[in-house]
Image (cartoon, rainbow, N blue to C red; front, side, top):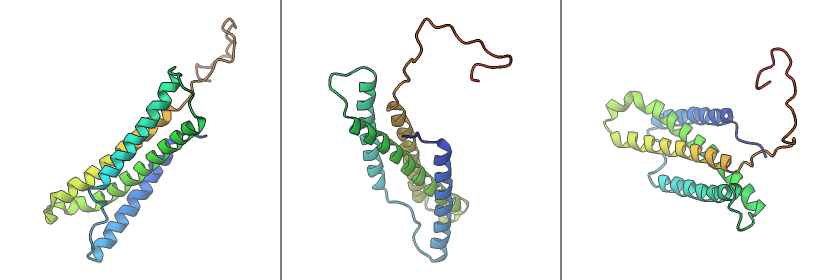
Length: 166
């Protein structure tokens, strides 16, 4: 299973930001409501974050030596997938609301409604928390590499100009 590449999260966020900006511009032109998620979606985000953390902490405890019970490998695989889904959906939500914010911010003084600003910032913050928790829980699920060489083996001589990471 591959790990999340932060560059893909950034690309996902940028695509969602441009889509959010376009959707807001089109909604404003049609005199429709802004395409912002309702406040209740913060509760949904919180449930997803807490569930992801609970599953991740369970896998991390087993990985760190608390092996009283056998860890179900399917549960561990699902935890990694859940963490990755949490990170990607957080990037989508963060990007979408950042795009809306980019359209709303220049005209905020004319609108006079700061409640929508707090709603956008809260939902974007919730998306950022989802990205962070997804990346952290994915790291919880990594198994440390095992030593494949015996301990009393001498290190290989390095070529000239070869550094520590070469």
